[in-house]
Length: 404
Image: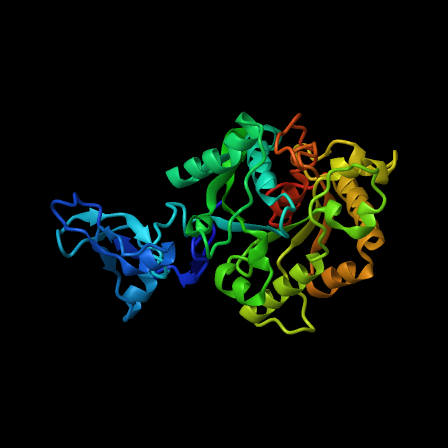
């Protein structure tokens, strides 16, 4: 289902632009239309000296009534004034990255995966995307399709191959300030099949899904978040991963000899900085709640099975098959909110309640084993990794809710 849109968000620099605010890159043979240095693109990607690329063609702003009516739709193509060849390669005017061909047509969902250092963000993204492509695709009659070669290459090399082929842990994500490649998100289209006229199958919904995984240290200071993490305040949903093994109250209850990461309790600071960043960017007053849905998910729950108890709802597989099961969700949400109070005190729960209008708690494990110290994944057993993502899809009415 197509939407009437007035603007779009670039999935690379996350600036919001009106639909007519788009530029083009010449697609002619370089021998016929000579490339020139593109400083805007090079500065964004951290390239020095500036890279020579095909010429950029700027579209003038609408001035009369006819042009303003045309500006209600994003232009599809233009003619290069240097070589008179048509081009359909659209660019973001702020960073000169090539925009997805679906931009401006469908709902754009930017999913921000955030969390402290060693909370398991990269492993989560790796396993979640594989899960969406396979099990979720079959259960919800949906299809996740990469939008470009950069997404295919980056997912395969940085996420899929280490976990699913080499069975090794993924190296820690570097700061965006140190590695500009971190700024390149994973961009997909997610389409859902449904019944049309005479019960014939047709594609009923399409969304552009942007996954952005950030380094834990990029959340350690407000200054860094403002410059490097603009995607957060333009996101459609946030998945905040919290490693229970980093919490002092949890560590004290685990058996001796349990491999443990470095201790940390910075999640309260991350929520505080995240809320402050969004409030400043969107001019949301303190007496108003932020309307971006946020899922607080405890990762690595396989390592704390002894603390959950035999009646825990997390002991069972997810029940979200073909629809979002509210009974299953409410059982998990209630249990994890109680555990959050027990392990982290009431401050974290209060921060969530007093900042975010729509929030929920989840428990999951991406790997199903504790490779700390060995870096080897002995047995890959993901559990409930899809729950926060499906909850966000439900918030945007892309999947149905189970009927009682």
